[in-house]
Image (cartoon, rainbow, N blue to C red; front, side, top):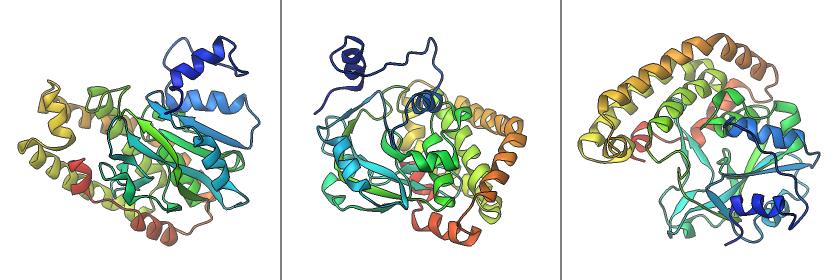
Length: 299
């Protein structure tokens, strides 16, 4: 495998190759950190890589080769492997009808995903974005802080008419949730809050009205899987956290949604004004790359 991301930063700081390291004194969140780097660059493409991900040699070259002269594609997804395992983390992302997003192919053999093809959007753990697209639709929403900001950006891009391609030769190993923890309280809160932000900002009206019912179905499957010792809810309990605490994070996420609602509705209106796809076309696109609430609860 290639250099670890922290090793890259250290090598740059020591002058091993020309690069600029931007260091924040506090954790400003994934989106804001990427936006800072984007503001300091004029390159036509922006590549992002999580701090718990490690790129194979040729990762950037494979993404750039796939970009070619295709002006309608604005995002490229990597083949992200689970670190140390012969299993896939993601080959692009899928969307649930309540705003939850999950990795396409997660846990499956990597050999099943060896074709260059269109996907809904990339995982921000290892992706490349076209600067022209970002200048049109905006950068990452910094209010997400952690988790789902890649889903939000990807859906905004798709509504504006941009495509995303999955590049199987762009290989990365990822220590899944290595930074925040696979089922930590931090992740539980931000994933739940931010999937609500995603839905309110991006879903067509009909889908937004149906989202609460889909959420109830997902909660049902979470409870069932918890009783069977499976899924993210069971991982949360095995981490020493009570089920009551998980319910509190869900409640807290909905309170945060109410506080953010005026801003989210203004952003929703802006997204609609810049849309190239009709609501019906966008709804069909989401359906093409959907994942069920039962599948979300099981992962």
